[in-house]
Length: 505
Figure 1 (cartoon, rainbow, N blue to C red):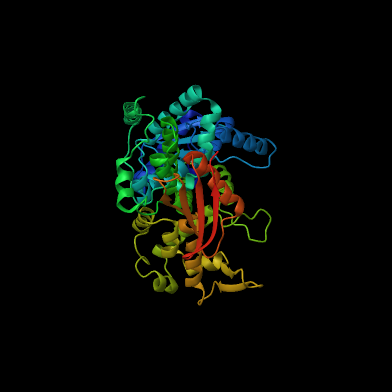
Figure 2 (figure 1 turned 90 degrees about the horizontal axis):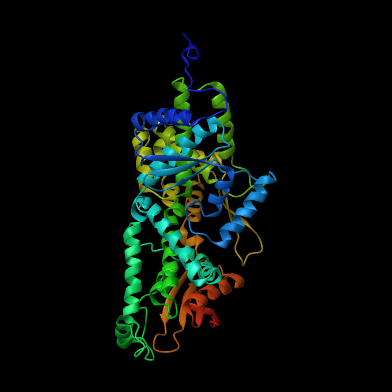
């Protein structure tokens, strides 16, 4: 009896119903969890219209986020582009929460809904639960409660203090989001109720400090006084988390403004692991939707038409355009991530002599355990350093170009050959190093006993300057939140090469 005669597809055609979504989810879950052993949060699937998907797009992928004018602007831009056919929409949005919430578009066909369920509900979901960065820096149990609290608080502030005042503060906080991350200290997770109680306690404390009799005297801060008295220098060490320092020490911020700074800082911290694992996260989810849906076909639960439709979308997603082709947008994280996880499986199952030389620890090993270990213990930079193989470098035709300011020509640094493999892997991994992507700007001095000016230092990386416009923008937003003079010193090594200053108005 042929495999085709044994086929009992769950459905045929493009139409979907909620009952079919449930059936596909149960079938895919059985393969993902019971057969391949993926460890996932419980799933919550929501079906939304394209308008709602556009809205979720605009608000940083968080449909429950607080309102802000920039989200509305982004919504209009995406909508016009989508309506004119200039761009498509993602088929899904997924939130790192417990339960894991996945949003499916109601315009999707049944094969595409199944693709999204496999990709988001079991691919991204298991990555969120397993990867060490997400375990360390985000609290899946608390993020929904916190965003509900944040949305409610921002709307209350708009009613009480006016839209303009709230949005001015949020504008400056958003501009500094990349500098609102604490890389070395995990924040304590709080529920919505705990957040609300903390916020009330902070307001209560500030009211207790307020007294008409004493308000004419300069405010005292024991910590700052002690430190300033000791050495006249604060902070004792440079501070890279600008939003945290502003939240704690900005002299003129009202309590509700400090709360807004804290909300944006926590939002920035939530997105911190996602920025470090773009290749891995998308590659992992793409690898698993490809594996799960093919297994669904092997079981006879879907037909050839189903396979042809989702494979067409899958092929588009993992296409890597050449640098000289129309539409090239850099290295496609879906393409690189999917290729690397697929290649690791190949190295485990069918290693070549080259693989045994480069990857002696994993060649011939159990591919599920090897992939699971890689997913749990790496970020993009270290993942590429550890697992990018010579075979993939040849397939992607990688090469490196030197472009130094002092030279009037370009030099080919390395190509995908025996002499260039290690160099290419090192250079590609460095591109995913956050220290290369985000300028190094730190607060070095707060003149607490003088004019309350704040001094920051920008250390140039490999001679790269902050563009004059961006440097001015940094000063403008910090000065707005700080309320006094802000200076930005630019250093090349230990040499001071430029100083910009802005007095708050």
